[in-house]
Image (cartoon, rainbow, N blue to C red):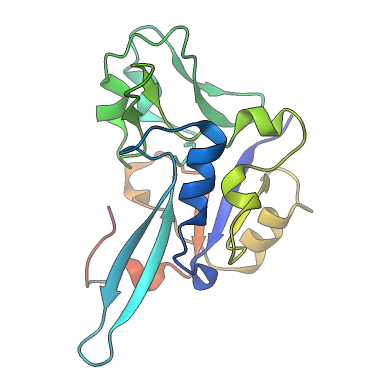
Length: 192
Protein backbone atom coordinates (compact mmCIF):
# COMPACT_ATOMS: atom_id res chain seq x y z
CA UNK A 1 0.00 0.00 0.00
CA UNK A 2 1.14 3.50 -0.83
CA UNK A 3 -0.14 7.01 -0.29
CA UNK A 4 0.77 8.80 -3.46
CA UNK A 5 1.42 12.51 -3.56
CA UNK A 6 3.42 15.14 -5.35
CA UNK A 7 5.83 17.88 -4.41
CA UNK A 8 6.19 20.72 -6.92
CA UNK A 9 9.29 22.88 -6.58
CA UNK A 10 8.04 26.15 -8.03
CA UNK A 11 11.58 27.54 -8.02
CA UNK A 12 12.42 25.10 -10.83
CA UNK A 13 9.32 25.57 -13.00
CA UNK A 14 10.21 26.97 -16.42
CA UNK A 15 6.64 27.64 -17.50
CA UNK A 16 7.18 25.42 -20.54
CA UNK A 17 3.77 23.74 -20.23
CA UNK A 18 5.25 20.32 -21.05
CA UNK A 19 3.23 18.93 -18.10
CA UNK A 20 -0.03 20.06 -19.69
CA UNK A 21 0.94 18.85 -23.15
CA UNK A 22 2.21 15.45 -22.00
CA UNK A 23 -0.91 14.94 -19.86
CA UNK A 24 -3.16 15.71 -22.83
CA UNK A 25 -1.23 13.33 -25.07
CA UNK A 26 -0.97 10.50 -22.53
CA UNK A 27 -4.62 10.64 -21.52
CA UNK A 28 -6.24 11.75 -24.81
CA UNK A 29 -7.73 14.87 -23.23
CA UNK A 30 -9.96 16.97 -25.49
CA UNK A 31 -9.14 20.52 -26.56
CA UNK A 32 -10.29 23.23 -24.18
CA UNK A 33 -10.02 21.19 -20.95
CA UNK A 34 -7.03 20.20 -18.83
CA UNK A 35 -6.05 17.70 -16.16
CA UNK A 36 -2.77 19.56 -15.62
CA UNK A 37 -2.04 23.21 -16.33
CA UNK A 38 0.23 26.05 -15.25
CA UNK A 39 -1.06 29.31 -13.81
CA UNK A 40 1.05 32.29 -14.83
CA UNK A 41 1.27 35.58 -12.94
CA UNK A 42 3.42 38.65 -13.22
CA UNK A 43 4.60 40.18 -9.95
CA UNK A 44 6.49 43.37 -9.22
CA UNK A 45 6.55 46.95 -10.40
CA UNK A 46 7.94 48.13 -13.70
CA UNK A 47 10.73 47.63 -14.65
CA UNK A 48 11.27 44.92 -12.01
CA UNK A 49 8.48 42.63 -13.20
CA UNK A 50 8.92 38.88 -13.06
CA UNK A 51 6.82 35.97 -14.27
CA UNK A 52 5.92 33.24 -11.79
CA UNK A 53 4.50 29.84 -12.59
CA UNK A 54 2.31 27.57 -10.50
CA UNK A 55 1.75 24.06 -11.93
CA UNK A 56 -1.73 22.82 -11.05
CA UNK A 57 -3.60 19.51 -11.01
CA UNK A 58 -6.04 17.60 -8.80
CA UNK A 59 -4.78 17.80 -5.22
CA UNK A 60 -5.87 14.22 -4.38
CA UNK A 61 -7.14 15.44 -1.03
CA UNK A 62 -7.37 13.14 1.96
CA UNK A 63 -10.65 14.86 2.85
CA UNK A 64 -12.08 15.45 -0.65
CA UNK A 65 -15.36 17.39 -0.92
CA UNK A 66 -15.86 16.04 -4.45
CA UNK A 67 -16.53 12.57 -3.03
CA UNK A 68 -19.18 13.77 -0.56
CA UNK A 69 -21.53 15.10 -3.23
CA UNK A 70 -21.42 12.26 -5.77
CA UNK A 71 -24.90 10.70 -5.72
CA UNK A 72 -23.71 7.41 -7.25
CA UNK A 73 -20.31 7.17 -5.48
CA UNK A 74 -18.47 7.28 -8.83
CA UNK A 75 -15.88 9.60 -7.29
CA UNK A 76 -14.08 8.07 -4.35
CA UNK A 77 -10.92 8.13 -2.25
CA UNK A 78 -8.88 5.02 -3.10
CA UNK A 79 -7.58 3.87 0.28
CA UNK A 80 -5.08 1.50 -1.40
CA UNK A 81 -2.97 4.31 -2.85
CA UNK A 82 -4.39 7.62 -1.64
CA UNK A 83 -5.66 8.81 -5.01
CA UNK A 84 -9.04 10.39 -5.64
CA UNK A 85 -10.43 8.59 -8.67
CA UNK A 86 -13.52 8.49 -10.86
CA UNK A 87 -15.25 5.30 -11.95
CA UNK A 88 -16.32 6.45 -15.42
CA UNK A 89 -18.64 3.48 -15.87
CA UNK A 90 -20.56 4.65 -12.84
CA UNK A 91 -20.43 8.43 -13.38
CA UNK A 92 -23.72 9.93 -14.58
CA UNK A 93 -22.20 13.30 -15.52
CA UNK A 94 -24.29 15.33 -13.06
CA UNK A 95 -21.40 17.73 -12.38
CA UNK A 96 -21.82 17.91 -8.60
CA UNK A 97 -18.20 16.92 -8.04
CA UNK A 98 -17.03 19.58 -10.50
CA UNK A 99 -18.86 22.27 -8.53
CA UNK A 100 -17.67 20.89 -5.17
CA UNK A 101 -13.96 20.94 -6.03
CA UNK A 102 -12.48 24.07 -4.43
CA UNK A 103 -9.43 23.88 -6.72
CA UNK A 104 -11.21 23.92 -10.10
CA UNK A 105 -9.45 20.66 -10.89
CA UNK A 106 -12.40 18.83 -12.44
CA UNK A 107 -14.21 19.29 -15.72
CA UNK A 108 -16.95 17.72 -17.79
CA UNK A 109 -15.37 15.65 -20.53
CA UNK A 110 -16.77 16.81 -23.87
CA UNK A 111 -16.03 13.41 -25.42
CA UNK A 112 -17.32 10.87 -22.87
CA UNK A 113 -19.72 13.20 -20.99
CA UNK A 114 -18.55 12.26 -17.50
CA UNK A 115 -16.51 14.11 -14.91
CA UNK A 116 -12.77 14.00 -15.51
CA UNK A 117 -9.61 15.04 -13.67
CA UNK A 118 -6.03 14.03 -12.97
CA UNK A 119 -5.68 10.51 -11.61
CA UNK A 120 -1.86 10.60 -11.37
CA UNK A 121 -1.92 8.50 -14.59
CA UNK A 122 -3.25 5.43 -12.79
CA UNK A 123 -2.66 3.29 -15.88
CA UNK A 124 1.07 4.17 -15.72
CA UNK A 125 1.28 3.61 -11.97
CA UNK A 126 -0.14 0.11 -12.53
CA UNK A 127 2.95 -0.76 -14.58
CA UNK A 128 5.44 0.93 -12.27
CA UNK A 129 5.80 4.17 -14.24
CA UNK A 130 5.51 7.77 -13.04
CA UNK A 131 2.74 10.11 -14.21
CA UNK A 132 3.32 11.65 -17.64
CA UNK A 133 3.57 15.20 -16.24
CA UNK A 134 6.39 14.11 -13.90
CA UNK A 135 8.22 12.11 -16.53
CA UNK A 136 8.19 14.99 -19.02
CA UNK A 137 8.81 17.97 -16.73
CA UNK A 138 11.75 19.82 -18.30
CA UNK A 139 12.59 21.68 -15.09
CA UNK A 140 12.18 18.49 -13.03
CA UNK A 141 10.04 20.46 -10.60
CA UNK A 142 7.38 17.72 -10.20
CA UNK A 143 8.40 15.00 -7.76
CA UNK A 144 6.04 12.06 -7.27
CA UNK A 145 6.00 9.10 -4.94
CA UNK A 146 4.78 7.40 -1.79
CA UNK A 147 4.34 9.93 1.01
CA UNK A 148 4.31 7.11 3.59
CA UNK A 149 7.81 5.97 2.57
CA UNK A 150 10.26 8.15 4.53
CA UNK A 151 12.96 7.37 1.94
CA UNK A 152 10.94 8.46 -1.10
CA UNK A 153 12.03 11.63 -2.84
CA UNK A 154 8.83 13.55 -2.02
CA UNK A 155 9.05 12.55 1.67
CA UNK A 156 12.65 13.73 1.86
CA UNK A 157 11.75 17.05 0.22
CA UNK A 158 8.83 17.52 2.61
CA UNK A 159 11.12 16.88 5.58
CA UNK A 160 13.82 19.26 4.37
CA UNK A 161 11.81 22.20 2.97
CA UNK A 162 9.02 24.51 4.02
CA UNK A 163 6.02 23.75 1.84
CA UNK A 164 2.64 25.23 1.06
CA UNK A 165 -0.64 23.77 -0.12
CA UNK A 166 -3.35 25.65 -1.95
CA UNK A 167 -6.20 26.81 0.30
CA UNK A 168 -5.13 25.02 3.51
CA UNK A 169 -7.93 26.74 5.43
CA UNK A 170 -10.48 24.43 3.77
CA UNK A 171 -9.24 21.35 5.64
CA UNK A 172 -9.21 19.15 2.53
CA UNK A 173 -5.65 17.95 3.30
CA UNK A 174 -4.20 18.15 -0.23
CA UNK A 175 -1.42 15.75 -1.21
CA UNK A 176 0.10 18.18 -3.70
CA UNK A 177 2.69 20.33 -1.93
CA UNK A 178 4.58 23.36 -3.22
CA UNK A 179 8.13 24.46 -2.43
CA UNK A 180 8.80 28.14 -3.06
CA UNK A 181 5.20 29.13 -3.63
CA UNK A 182 5.16 31.52 -0.68
CA UNK A 183 5.82 34.48 -2.97
CA UNK A 184 2.80 33.46 -4.99
CA UNK A 185 0.36 33.62 -2.11
CA UNK A 186 1.43 36.90 -0.56
CA UNK A 187 -0.78 39.97 -0.39
CA UNK A 188 -0.30 40.69 -4.11
CA UNK A 189 -2.98 38.16 -4.87
CA UNK A 190 -4.03 34.54 -4.67
CA UNK A 191 -3.77 31.91 -7.35
CA UNK A 192 -7.14 30.27 -7.03
